[in-house]
Image (cartoon, rainbow over all chains, first blue to last red; front, side, top):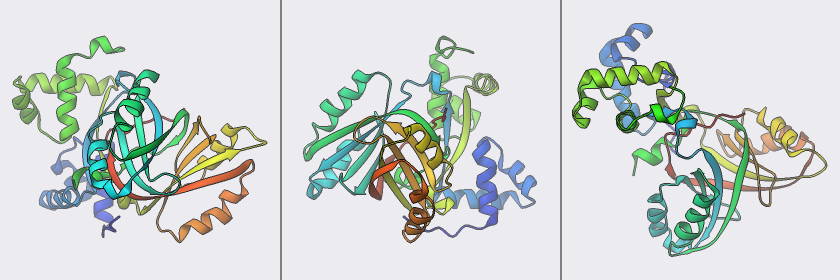
Length: 158
Length: 155
């Protein structure tokens, strides 16, 4: 992971937009006592480097899929590029990380009904060429979750 | 707006546009969907005021100085798994904590500035938590996909 060089102003801009991304550049500039052009430049850089992104969150009860499961995968890593490309296409899979551990790929899936989870593991993940074994673990309770911090670079750099 | 019935197709399309670019103007969204800008602003205001919609910036782990992600599966014995998870959740390094089914009872995601920080975390914090019988750790090498709409409210 890259180590970006961010100053206090960058962090303050991010803090404001983390609460509400619809705030205008002019209003942020006025709040922080800098030029509007400075805000525009800083935001451009932060977005280009995959450090921030703007998104819409809707209330979980309106969301189609609100349960979380972890699907750990053992796969033939010599074919990793193709495997990653195919896993990325599966909409139920929310995040994918390559790992050093008992499993080489870890995915987080958001689903609604248990049948959907069966569908994604058996019919979609196991069907990918090179995937040898999967193990599913259902999150029955989320005790802690840090909102707003994500793998932005995984989204913007690919 | 208390249930899904009040959330119509136009609302959903506006949300989709915002997911692609949360800072798109009302005019840009209106043009993409071929509707009036006033409709966009009215719908957005209604959704935001009812607490259904939030448009936010999300930031990369690196922005917060986290460069190492580690998943830990924990086998618990002699203590309620919920208590172990709650205690682990107090540590700032613990980014997420779940009670799970399967071979482990608790799963946590650690976010650390550096690999060197792991030993301190384990000796000073993790090893002092009672009820942990065994741990299996996996070090994150590369993030391949990450949904930007991750929002999970811890209960």
